[in-house]
Amino acid sequence: MLVIPPSKVCGDCRRGRDPAATSFFVMSDEWDHQEFAILLDRAHDGDDHAFGLLYERTAPMAHRAAQHIVRDRHAADDLVQETFCLVLNAVRAGRGPRSSFPGYVLSTVKRLAYRHSSARGRVVAIQDPAAWDALLGRPLDGSGAAGDASRVATALASLPARWRHVLWLVDVERYSPAELGSRMSMTPNAVSSLAARARKALRAAYLESTTADA
Image (cartoon, rainbow, N blue to C red; front, side):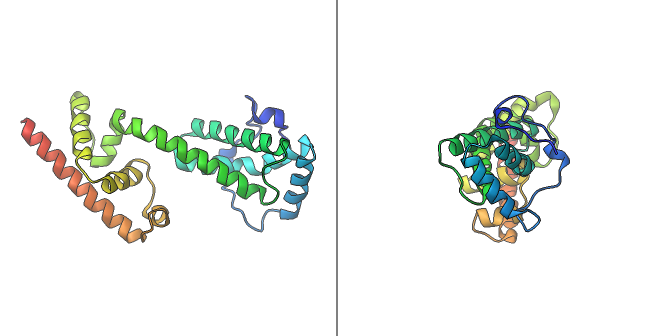
């Protein structure tokens, strides 16, 4: 079994094992929680080998969670590195998790990934023609992509914030209604209906802008 020492967690060699090649890790009885507790106690006592084992056990889960949110393998790599740097520094400072190490890692990486996704979303939504592709549900005309994207941006801006939000999450970030239900305090069917109404309104606003330009 390959062990990644903490010195590698914050460096270029953090990928001792390919997380994408590992099935999605779930916090369940398949993990030896007693072993996690022992390793975590040893890590708090300064045992870098124990922290390396904790990294080996939980890095694949963290990578899958990050990639699911940011939809970018390289960004997920960076977020996992940042997560374990933060956790390692906390442990070395006498803070950090005292139990449920996987849960602590998962919570940290998700927080960082959502922050990263939110920051990038405001830029990509305007600059990436593929985003307009997804929102309108049809290919853009490559010859006039810049003007087309500008009209979609104008149409999108005319919608209520709630509609803009659900369109971005469903059509661009590719979250499923089931995934968004609890996050938006709605049933999956309600999320689907909201997205359909928002999509219809966006297309109507877009067609209106193209007619006005004709």
